[in-house]
Amino acid sequence: MPNVVIVREELPVTSLKELIDYVRANPGKVTFGTQGNGATPHLTAMMFQGMTDTRMVHVPYRGETLVLNDMIGGHVDVFFGNIAAGGPPFRDGRVKILAIADTRRSPVLPEIPTTAEAGLPGLVSTGWFALAAPPKTAPALASDIAKAAADVIKTPDVQVKFRAASVEPIGNSPAEMAAFIQAEAQRWGEIIKKNNIVVD
Image (cartoon, rainbow, N blue to C red; front, side, top):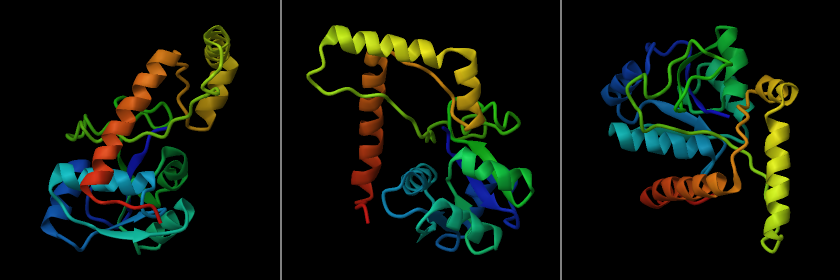
């Protein structure tokens, strides 16, 4: 599930580039909401600031609904939230979505460019799910379960249900998933260490 760059409707920007320029012109004045230290939106905001050499003010909340409500009320400027939460207020015209923080456009909002298309290719932030088995599971059994799960994920009716929840079904092999998890751990670990982030 990709995260998206959401801004309040009144913020005078209509693109990711304009947002970067606006934050640079207003250092320490633009606020970004999150669900707290260490949450994906917080890490994504820190990644964004590091890539763009900008500085915003962190406003932690107890949930994404509270962030979006305050954004709609004009009290917080930016939120790197997930597409499932940001989609409805965007469609209602209550917030703006500037980019999808993924390597490809989302079928849920195909009109929204990716961060790469919008000029910031390194800003990739997606929520993902994986099946895991105990470490001593027999390799043959693990392989059979993985194949069965991938086969189910690739069936049309299951794909429709995943996409209805704004989740893009993939069904990677165990080796592909292990490599992905390792890359994610390294990528986000660097952001956490660089910014001394501690979970609340």
